Amino acid sequence: MDKQEEILKAALKLFVEFGFHGTPTSKIAKEAGVANGTLFHYYKTKNDLILALYTDIKTRLTEHIDSKASKNDSLKVAFKSLFINTLQWSQEYKQEFYFMQQFRVSPFILLIPHEDILRQAKAHLDIQAGIKNEILKPLPAEFLFSLINSHIYGIDQYLSSTNLSDSKQQKLIEDSFEILWDMIA
Image (cartoon, helix red, strand yellow):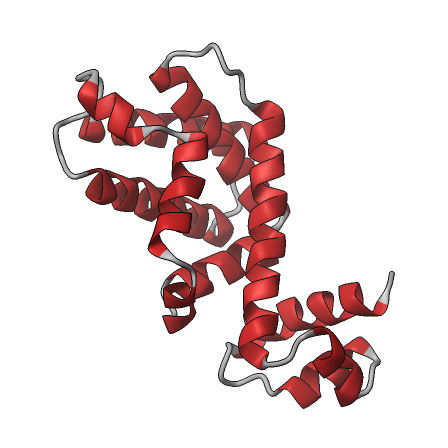
């Protein structure tokens, strides 16, 4: 593993454990086994490090979702695939997904241009087209996007706090998708 990867790995661990503000860069450098100067060689500021970690995790999640997606599915089937695969990824990469939750409710989310967030979401699920084609309820797209995200994060938190068997976990994910679909379609 190279130094930059070690820094990201250490930052993830410490941000999840201590939060953004409770994790000084000196602690990240020490955990990564690099000098402070090395950390700042790769990331000019702590904000740059946080954004780089977010981008890295978001890219890996997106690649996972894209690898499972079928381009010819109906909106409901495509959305169900996205929903299930996101939650399965969240259970496999707990720290990464927890970081995404932290980031989502932090001031750092404001550093990502709003258009970029909407573009990322549209790449997976075209909410506007679903509304236009009367598949989804005629509500503001950003509101539907917020409902979907909140539902996914809530189910992840529940799954992380329980000790369900794989089959019960899968059933819960499928049932919760149907609840969400009924709410937005």
